Length: 413
Image 1 (tube, helix red, strand yellow):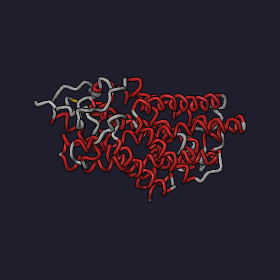
Image 2: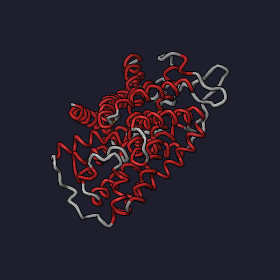
Image 3: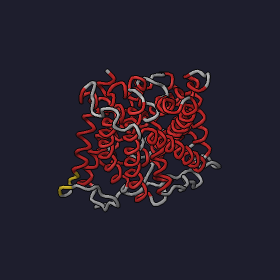
Image 4: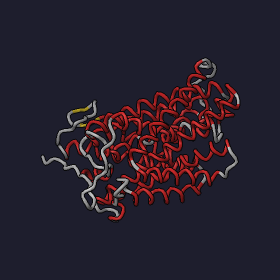
């Protein structure tokens, strides 16, 4: 069987994206993308839907993410380019479907960046007198510039911000430990149906693990590094999310968490007053800005990768001679993200994102199944639980993604 050739994108003059990232950096990037997306921005909305059982919604989302993450891990060990899903679907179902889905993924990236930028705006507007929309636009522009400036500089900011946001979540967990057992964690105000609906919304909080594959061309030994980073990112964030959710509802009544634009800061303030609110709000600013940076970074790399494959205009594959970044793709993603912040409704934007995500993930899991039979080359990473060649976990990924897709549509309607 013919092996799939890796595509190393080149630019005029023989330039390449720089390979700067090891397992630690890629894992931190994955955790950094995931952590800021939902736990700081959406936990208030989710608490209003499912009450004290928000932790269960996070667990359900984590399981769905794990199934799909394993499919991504296996596929990323075969394909080495930044185009990610385009390469996977092209190998399984052809160029046209691959191009269509990839455009949806790019759109998902800019939509999610806008949603998290609005989360940033919510926290910043709770600290200083600034217009909500202006704050969202400003952080997109700032992170686009950092993205342009260089992958090494972006990585340094990511390492710093991820450490800060990680510590912020640990603070919430530590504050909540003494309150564990004070509320009924199985009380479902809207039944299990409500838990599933909220799980579909909160899947947005896990978004990011799939974008790790877009760093393949800037990662060292990507065939091993990328699969490990995907799995580690999902496990680490799932544990944090569940513990933070339990702590939050144990400290502050759900009614006060629900609908807050700065929910975790409110939780901290309930325990330690206004100073704690300011500290957690600042931490949340680092968290959400980091996710905006990394989501825009990985989305721009996919735009770049598709331009290299001549599915998008060649201009998007241009790399800055000095900075070594795909600057046209970077600023194009930034401009579209700014436009989407004008929606200003973070719940709607998050629901729209998850609809696109679940449709994509169902297809990616299906591709993982198909390529077990269509492409027989050796895989550096092979997911567990197989019946012969058939990957059982990918089938579960298809089923759970479709179920969550239905609930995401219900949320929008």
